[in-house]
Image (cartoon, rainbow, N blue to C red; front, top):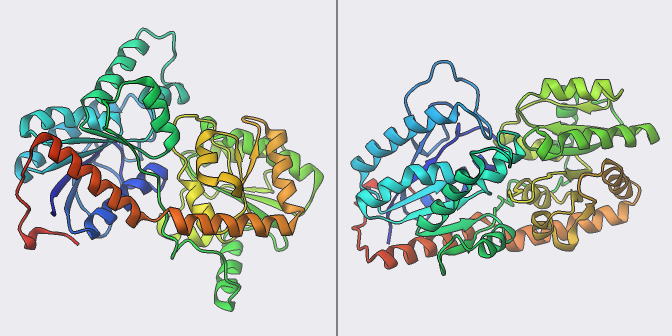
Length: 413
């Protein structure tokens, strides 16, 4: 039965990075299943085609995307709460689908007011993210209250869906999610758009033009990364590994794509003497990402966080790129035996594993083909949407809800 879904995202949607890609692709897949979906989010960010977005009140001094933990979120979330209330009273949704704990906290009063299920789309631990970003310390007097708040949100949700089985296992051990309400719904990937370079003259010309635009000299073999630029994402360690590799070989170049603040990382690469071997173009528009990834021979996923998802790996896999990742449970969950793993936090081991792929073409081909096959078989957004529908149905049934379906002319397909 089609439903009206109010999706809440306490972020500057859309900003071309992992969590936003999950929000966007989930929303599109849910709409394709016949449901009406309205997204309430912050005042800034890009509008996306076919998605009905209701934004919070304008904050003129915040134009850039707010990434991760920030003091600005305190008042941005107040604005989002007001917008969410108004939209909820207008739409009377059957489901509230909240991305992140902050959004779920905004959704809890609406859950009670409308007597509808609240679904927490769990992207990782709220307090762990604050620790990763240096926004909070375990010695802070706020640490225990915030941990209790996080557990309360987990407990109050009608269902919690995680992007990895590892996150689900952590929550299972934590015991803060009520029995039968915890679900693993992995990130997906569009395997039609994200696919291996096919060697056609058209694609070869596009690749050559894109390399020239980026200023990458001919003959360089590219190692690619896409994602946020931050210490907990392993960006510093990746540039350290680039220095080690570039000292041993002159044929390798690193294309490190993402935001915020690529300027600082350019300066860091220059300070290590590899400024001419590391290209940091900044934010890459998601619709163009496959073209940039197609330039690479090896992909890297050096994320250090042990609790967050790592959806970029799905894109690498669909592209047929051999992938080197730090040995985290999330990376292993995505890649299985189709990737290579470096010791967590070790620039030396990361460099060694990248060179192993560069020096072994047969290994690179085998890893890339196996990763592509795994992505096609297991990581479709349509499969994700079907899982979400089942979670919605179970949550509605537990509440005894028989919310009427919206009129057909209201559906957005």
